[in-house]
Each structure stands twice: as structure tokens, then as C-alpha cells.
Image (cartoon, rainbow, N blue to C red; front, side, top):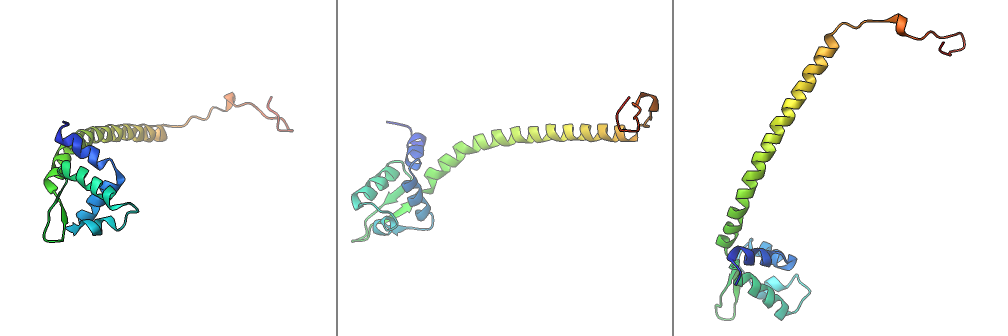
Length: 137
């Protein structure tokens, strides 16, 4: 058997199951209401729900003829915790990159300011002379 995180990611890999999770994030609803927006059979929806349930992302219950489904936030918290480590890693890397780029920009601005304030020497002797017809001699 795979670990819980792998099962969660496998369940979330399917767009239909992600749409079901998005709908359940708005609140508990019945299986028949969950199936309405999808062009698939009842058994196909049930298979998707079973995958989500096995991954611990949803729970289903029976209350008389009503079969409510609800999202299980703890399962998504596990994914969020796992992703948070990588989010922190990349944020630190991007912060260091930003600092480095700011340093380069400051150095470039400093060099540009130094070049603008340096006296410009006009060396006419090195310029080629032009004839009456615009050709350089």
C-alpha cells in the first residue's frame, strides 16, 4: 500500500476529483448533487468518490436516503504542510536572488553616475575629416 501523501496526490491528479473537492469546499452536499455537473454515469462518479475517500480527502455517510459527502480538511493540511517546506525553500532562494539583483542594479547605477560626471574630452584630431561630398578622408 502507498503512503497517505502519495494516495492524496494520486487522487488529486484527476481533474474531475479536483472539481469534486472544489465543490465540497463550499460545503457538504449529496452524491447526486456532486454528479450533476459531470457528463458521466453514477457508477463513474462513485468510483471517483471512492478514490477520494480512500485517500482520506472526503467522508461519506448515510442519513436515511440522503448520502452526504464532506471534505476532510486534515488530509489537505498534510499536503499543505508538505508543500510548505518547499515554499519556504523557494522563498529563501528567491529572496537571495532579489538581494543579488538589487546589488547588481545598485552597482550598475553607480557606474553610470560615475561615467556621466567624468569630464568628456573632445579629441578633434582623432575624428576623420569630411570632404565637401560627405566622404571621410
